[in-house]
Image (cartoon, rainbow, N blue to C red; front, top):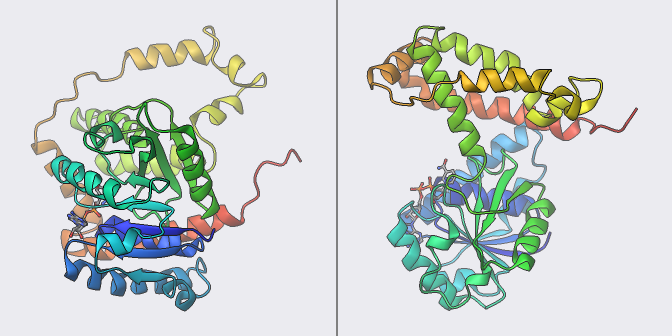
Amino acid sequence: MSQNVACIGVGNIGRAWAIAFARGGCTVRLFDAMPESLERSLSMIRQSLEDLVKADLVQDADALMARIHIATTAQEAVDGADHVQESAVENLELKQKLFTELDAICAPETVIATSSSEFMSSQLIGDVQHPERIMVAHPFNPPYLIPLVELSGHTGTSQAVIDRSRALFEGIGMAPVVVKKEIKAFLLNRLQAAVVAESLYLVGNGYCSAQDLDRAMTNGLALRWAFIGPFMTGHLNASGGYRDYMRDDGYGGTYRRMIADLANDHEWDYSLPVAVSEEMEEMVPTSEVAKGQRWRDRRLMALLKHKRDAEDYSGS
Ligand SMILES: NC(=O)c1ccc[n+]([C@@H]2O[C@H](COP(=O)([O-])OP(=O)(O)OC[C@H]3O[C@@H](n4cnc5c(N)ncnc54)[C@H](O)[C@@H]3O)[C@@H](O)[C@H]2O)c1
């Protein structure tokens, strides 16, 4: 993929995006309102690349670095860009202003996507001239390790823009999914919130420890969820496929009863997260969170390598 990409805002997510785009063959220009963020981002990108080389996920760190350039103005960053990935700080007013500015300085055919975790693209188009090229491309941290990117337009985003973005993200080896109608928090964070809500309910009401709840997830559901989702899981659990699995006199009925029994009071007292934290700290002390993050990323890299090398279903 030899497209030109501008990363606007290069904090945690913007600098990780730079790696994902450059690894995919794009030329990347970085711009940030804070010059010190720009300088810091280059050394942090190099550090991350060393880990990726060790994990055999990047072959030539120097070649990749050579595709990443610093721009001193937003205009310089977006000149000739096919795609602009905005990852400035999460503040609606700031993003609205920034989108108006970016829309004014980008060529009309440039796609402008926000990384926002919370805001929908319809909230950013108030004063823009070309709303049809504005959309959300929501990543997970860090996008060079987690391939999923959620693409979400507003009702005026053109289908061609969504299609081009999908092709770009697939072209750099990511796994885009399209959110067909705007919805708060998009897809994965809604799914995650449902699991977090029930986890807090189960631990908060004394059904299990926080450590056992995590153990149940990592030794149970998460093992297969790394390669098949909840629908394919059901499909492969019944000889007649998903329609058989979900019959009302089968697991469909079981799920209806289980779902009716799920917690629907999602309030909790802050003492609950504190108690959960104490259990987590027995395993990773707060002073070692950074070490824990590096361990997590190494495990993620190994899993990613396995997924990359693993065969897809081929029918044999
Ligand atoms: N951190 C995550 O886990 C995560 C995950 C998915 C999406 N996001 C989204 O990514 C975006 C960035 O989050 P982050 O965690 O990287 O934040 P961050 O605070 O680490 O970085 C934000 C950067 O934006 C820069 N900035 C502020 N105003 C700017 C402007 N007007 N123009 C250019 N740069 C500007 C800041 O100097 C900073 O370097 C947010 O919209 C967030 O919702 C974050």
